[in-house]
Length: 443
Image (cartoon, rainbow, N blue to C red; front, side, top):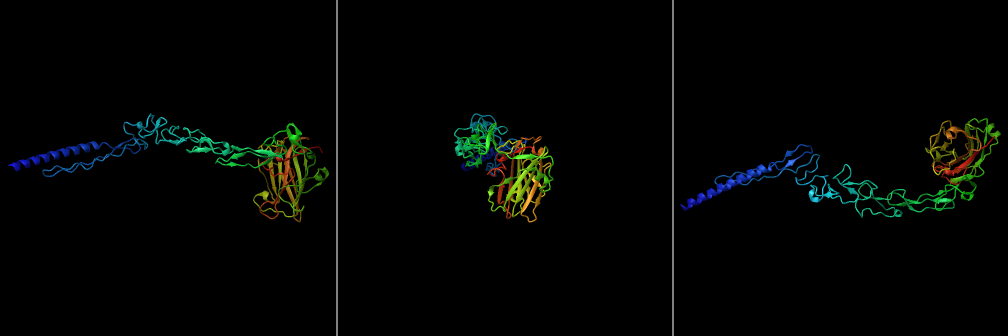
């Protein structure tokens, strides 16, 4: 009897356990099946999957508790941004503390995707609110002790950001060392290269001016402010003893011949003797001279060149035997080409064409070259319309900038020497102030 009662009690307990387990499993499955919410990045949402119900029992014993009950994936906002918990703020929303944000980072008053601690990044840039992004180049960092400014002399940090989240160095061209000037030669101030280095700048001649404290003068007050063979006129250094060009009514034929018009004009020869690049040996290696005439329409030039070895074998005309002619019609004598009337013409020996390297002014320019039978000399002749040179109505007494150079190549390859009419420097291709001057005269 006692054993029977014990068995009934055990069976009743088992049924109670079985019922309790079933109820718990059903409730868990129902509640978890709606917990996970997923998004594909669009406005629609898909419920996540819940857990499974446990196995049922058998006989007098109850079944096991459900083995599933895994929640769905975390919800996502449209566009792929993490959906914050219901009690948290979304990325980009205004906030006052980290705990308010689903991202866990409240920076600059908004919920940001990171702590964004670098002073050259920000969470509140236009169209990027809530995303830690670099601030524009040249902007002062938003935090103290970031990109501390260093002296320009070091070319180090300039106290601003570089636009890539880092600190910027002093920009290229920033002066980092004092210049100097003596004996009419200026050494410009050293400048930063933009990458933290202080670089030297090539020296330049002041002629026809002299030095001021640390640089070349750009105007004069008295003759002593000008270099030799020049005088101060209207605050400009003007070359003395400027060659005078004779005017003519009859014009020469441009054929490379020294015709009677040249002979009868009594125009003086101007020697080309100043070697500015390389070296020239005996006179037969390279000598040259020229004479000029003018009319109201054009400038005429005749050049005679003696050269025992004439070469034309390079794509770059100036590397071979060639003639370079430069004009500055308004005689501005600027430190750089003015894109108005400063021009440079290049004529290669034995070439059929020529170039004007600054403004492309070739209209009406004609030329001819005639080489001696033994190929040891040649005559060059050319006509330049004043309208092409930028001088509409030339008159006697008009001064203009002029330079002529002879390029010499004796053995192929690079240029071996260059000889010029005026000056001792080779910077005239970049500096019209180094030109000489010519004066338009009468017959």
